[in-house]
Length: 277
Image (cartoon, rainbow, N blue to C red; front, side, top):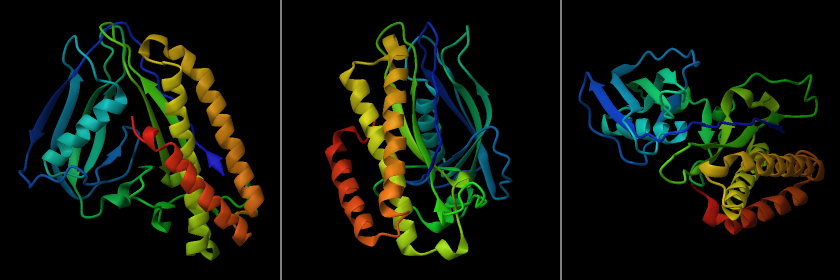
């Protein structure tokens, strides 16, 4: 099991709110609020050959709140759905600086037939289980000679500074498609269940991180204290992932594998209150 840390901090001294704008070339039927929208970051070099709908912007709107990278990505997704688009490609990203504490984003939006083909990161969801199509990476049997498949997942946090009120701290767990892989002989339902539990364990500890940050009253005013909590919870997750592989013999011990599946289900329920930001 290989973990990938997403560690983002927005630091500044004034507050801001996003001003959202659209420049739509073609009018489509809006998508539902829960429709899948894929976001490709500015470094993603995938070629999108399907329909370009237009462009959208989230920029500094003045002295207010709610313009972290996490929040503005949600804003851009909402704009895309309203425009009938399901792929957002970031084309410009200005990070917080002395002029603004906002993450300022520009993006092109597209309507594609199968947005999952473009996914690079998958947010954990009870309604979205992994499939083998999500494992897009090149196999690494040199560093992982005993593995039939490898799940690359992790969690991280982000905060924005606000001089008018305490800002929130956001936690997110994701599966990284191009760093996750499977060998042809591993493509079966049993191995996939084993890999899903790895991702579920990542989600458990992202919820634990939310809980511990809340219990410690971590906000944008004291976000520096979050690092030690993050490091400890992340190390707990890493040790748990290794123990899971050791005890199940990477899924070969069926009874032990079923025991872990039951335990993970219970722990997800235990931290249900902390499943979202």
